[in-house]
Amino acid sequence: MELKSDIDQHNVIEEVNKFLFDMPEEYSLGHCVAKDMRMSAGIAIYFKTHFGRVGELMDQRPKVGSVAYLKHNDRFIYYLITKEYSNAKPSYNSITGAITKLRDLIVQHNVKQLAIPRIGCGLDKLDWSIVKGIIEKLFKNVGCTIKICHFTHNLSKESELGRVEHPSTFQVYKSIKDIEKREFEKLNIILISRKTTLPVYWDQHFQSVNEKYCFKSQYYKDYQEDLEVGQCLCYSTTEACIFVIITNKNTTDHFSYQNFEKGLVKIKMLIKNDQWHPTFIIHRQTDYTEDLINKKVVSLICSVFLELTPCLVLQLVSSNY
Image 1 (cartoon, rainbow, N blue to C red):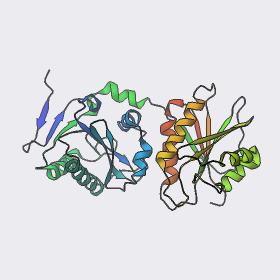
Image 2 (image 1 turned 120 degrees about the horizontal axis):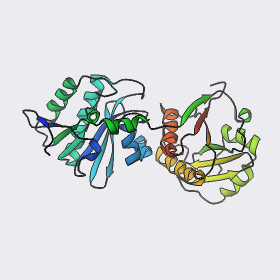
Image 3 (image 1 turned 180 degrees about the vertical axis):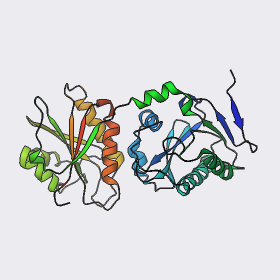
Image 4 (image 1 turned 90 degrees about the horizontal axis):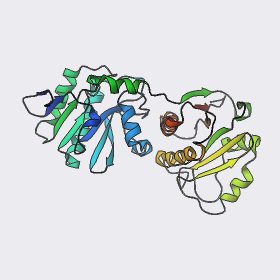
């Protein structure tokens, strides 16, 4: 059966009643996300679960009005950054900037076929006629055919997305010594080491965990040999598992979300067969100048541990922060 379509006069856009992820693989894909990369609602969940590599997107450090992307087999997956936070709304200025950057990347990557939803016009509530006009103007004479897939026309798949349960996240104004575990449970404490070589990386978060769980001596032994970024060290006590993820070679480097994500995947593999719904604890990072780092860290934890849900993520905030 032929799809119903509405082809505009410049033959740039064709609107089709088809689910975006049912499009042939010769089509590159795109959608809108926030700078915090949470992707916890709507079709963004499909992108997150299908393509993953959220840390790789974060390491591109795109600004609002820009685009991050992944190369997946022979096609590109584009993430238009139209707002700062997932619970905010985009403006026409921000989405115009992102579409402009998308056009530039389409030309650079020599993409001839692109499929997107009605970007900015689902949960973000922008007017499709205005956004469509922006796309038509910017993509005129670019040589790329764009299919607009009406996600909301597929009610069964939309309903499936609405039922996805995510980890519960909370900011807790306590120190590690005040966190109580549930009966029969081990707490999973995640620490971040920002270097691979001696002298050993150690900060106030390591110190507070060590005062309660005494893992320092074994951790120092592990540093007798150079470590690798993305590596995850594990120290198990009766009450807790302490995981140390190596994110950087040097403390002067930008925080690597991709290496942090690699470590989280290793944690997931280690605990995925546990019978109890896990609790994860991470300290709020205060010694980075990068904005949104703590929101991005929690977003990555939720992304990687999505299949462990229901689980709990506690972000400890210092009382003097």
